[in-house]
Length: 339
Image (cartoon, rainbow, N blue to C red; front, side):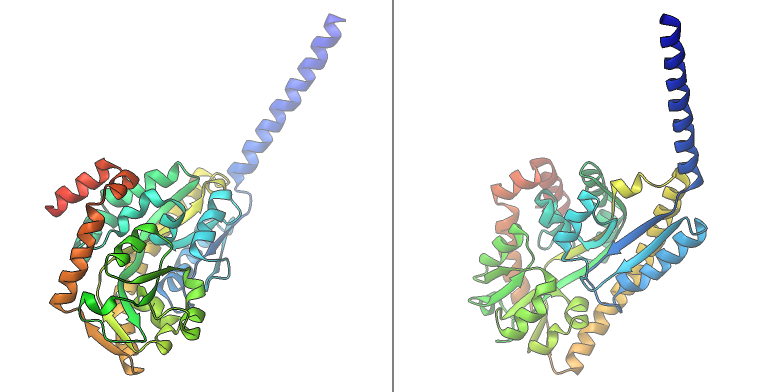
């Protein structure tokens, strides 16, 4: 009886070992994987343009074992929805602004603190290629998201249908759409704004119907989505910088072989560099196109900058945000800013 049991056990173990070997062989061979990318921008936006570069690079270097499909224009949902779907593994990848990321993980909202970066040089040194970007990558890695690269959304400005914005007082009483991030809401409340949190996919209709008077947004998205057609005034406030993360679901990442993972990572790095270059070129073009369409485009006055910075100080020094973003992070930010 004992001998028979041992024979059965040996057969079971042999089958288990064979199945394990087969499984490893199939993964190493690179079973076909499709990476579906969701994004909210239009077909002409830099996200959409460089998605072609990413697709070509991945598919050619994996010999078609990894395929890429891109779904822009918000067809996969708003940014918050897409980030949540990536965490669950329902969506393979989202190219989303860090604002969309912070809507799901509010502890990362510090990357959008008003006047955090003086210029693009600081953005590149501290965010895209610096400690802030690495902090975001490491944090999301523990949340089910593999960040392949940090790209760019835009420096943000203000548009509205009521009046030119040349000083903080001009903002009082305006009903402005703001992203779904609590820190944004506090910032604008300090300026007397009536902030209305809203996903960008809902915004064009809200502007058209007069549900909101205006918006906080980047020039490229504003122009590409035709939001400027319902706005009389645009102010280049540059009050908040917003980056972009190429977020891949860890569940999809784990389907790739190590070689495929490197190919996908390298392709994302190449695409993000191209995306940032195009994005910075397109900011000026978008403001120029809005002006040509009849929008009054206004440079930020010293008074407006002063008033916006005063409101930003209240946010930076609010203990609530130190608790949300951690004292360590806020202390480092303030030290580097000399505050």
